[in-house]
Image 1 (cartoon, helix red, strand yellow):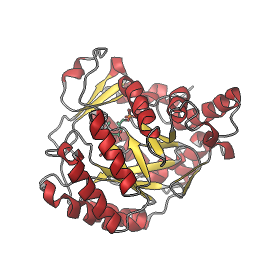
Image 2 (image 1 turned 90 degrees about the vertical axis):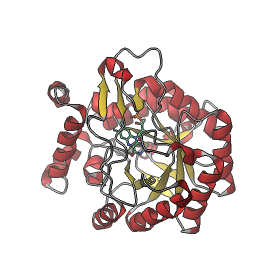
Image 3 (image 1 turned 180 degrees about the horizontal axis):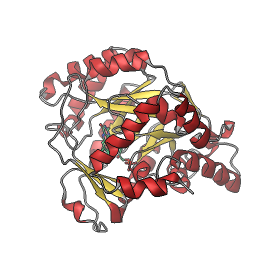
Image 4 (image 1 turned 45 degrees about the vertical axis):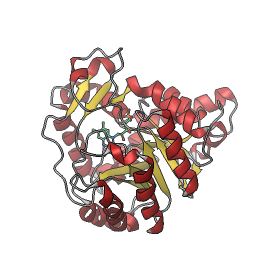
Length: 351
Ligand SMILES: Cc1cc2nc3c(=O)[nH]c(=O)nc-3n(C[C@H](O)[C@H](O)[C@H](O)COP(=O)(O)O)c2cc1C
């Protein structure tokens, strides 16, 4: 029996953010102790070369990573790796510490296997996160999701992003520029062409590499095309698709669909996969597919649609700590079924 069958109903009695704090706190307690090795012996992903992916100069032991927002302050990347994840994207991190929005700000949509959040980029700030990353090497690649400090005007955003990059540079393996958070004042206007080019250009000047940009699923098609042109012009290293959506699909049943914020989980899966395909058809760099991944089949759909790596957050809440191992084991079966030698072989098979 999966211990999460027991833990989930208990956790789901707590407010969502309290439950997240309990799980995260538990991971913090075990990280670096012998219990972390026990976790690894139970939850590690299969150690199999067919799962290995090379992307933007990094070697990923498997394609399944933790999406930004789960470990905002880089406190538990190693514990997450012991749960079978092949990379961890920590953050979003801002130059200055931020409290985020008032609670409650994270809501379960249980009937829909979804979440709505309006966290507002709560985090301890670049100095603290940078120190923590530099102090604790992790066995899998660690990316840092970099975002704008809330009170900083968009003209000053490039310098703000650069500051964060410089603080976290030493401890990270790749950098993701977040211009797509729906929950922070003045944030989405950063996705206009000029603002995005200025921020990304500044980071390229600062030497940030590998450098990826994370896009919103709510961007109109011409704006996505503009963003991809910038990716090309600046020779960026990858695209993460997608962030949460402010949209509310008609299919949602949970009363919490009325909460303001970004929707994640099952209901965004198909649109996120569509965006992966749209991006992968237009750029030559790796695409990281994120949005509603909660099974091997879902991960495989994103890979076939062009994702070199996938990430998840909401799936972990509903499926529990064995999810990365199950997805990776399931991927091996799907590769066998379809005659692919490796995950790398299946990337973009549907394009
Ligand atoms: C509580 C919460 C906090 C998040 N914080 C961030 C963040 O700081 N930066 C970011 O780029 N994405 C953030 N995300 C978005 C996720 O990284 C991911 O793009 C989105 O949730 C879709 O994936 P999922 O359906 O697997 O959850 C957050 C998501 C959740 C649920």
